[in-house]
Length: 318
Ligand SMILES: [Zn+2]
Image 1 (tube, rainbow, N blue to C red):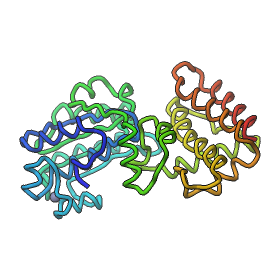
Image 2 (image 1 turned 45 degrees about the vertical axis):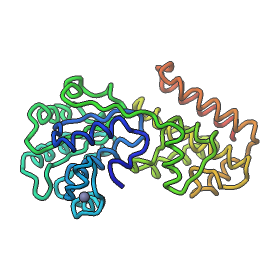
Image 3 (image 1 turned 180 degrees about the vertical axis):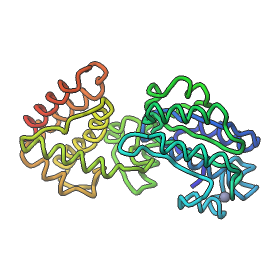
Image 4 (image 1 turned 60 degrees about the horizontal axis):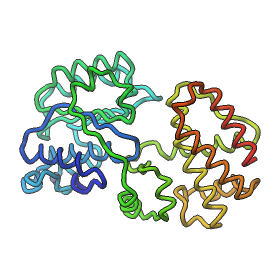
């Protein structure tokens, strides 16, 4: 795929594409918006277009996807591209220092060095300050792209140094196209449950998180409880993980098939989770968890939410 194939983010793509066409590319960007809408994907496609070796494609503001540079970026082995991701939920200064050094050298193969800092809001204060230094004096021929779904957790000084592109929640039509591309289909009601986001479009540790979500529901049903949330983000993450599973449980109970499941690869585990309860309670459980997730800002106390969710899931699914 190439930059022009990114679905549902026309404005951001247009801005990036026009920079490539004009050969006037900013040094630092902030890609902001909810998770699962294509920010990291766009950052990678942008890095490809910036370094593409096919002049005709660059003239169109996109990449060819077949030259040696494009293929290396696709295989994540391009020497001029680096992606930083949180390690156990934190980006530390030890991850940012080498980036600053990496950017200070001229590109070895490509036109520009590109660093993508994914979940940039997870940088701790020391890492943030180190990143800020680079943003204040960006080395020539380098691009830094900060990707975040929690912009308010970034230092204002960092945000103000970047060209900010706001990524929008995906319209249902775009979600449908993306799922089709991945050979998945959902009906309109299911698509609307996605709330404008396709978790997994950006890859990452989706599967691991999903499996933790299944374990969490199993634990609660068995009489245990949710693993303690250290940060509010852990709580938000729990809801993002649990909701698609609860949705799948409802679908599995109604349809009796795995045809419409998002998590069809674990259809058996999903089915087991539905065995102790009936459809009415499952829908009630889904509505309740979903309702709380939409109003999390009204719950300042994590423990209250945790106990509430333990009780709801245990009572309705156990
Ligand atoms: Zn290319």
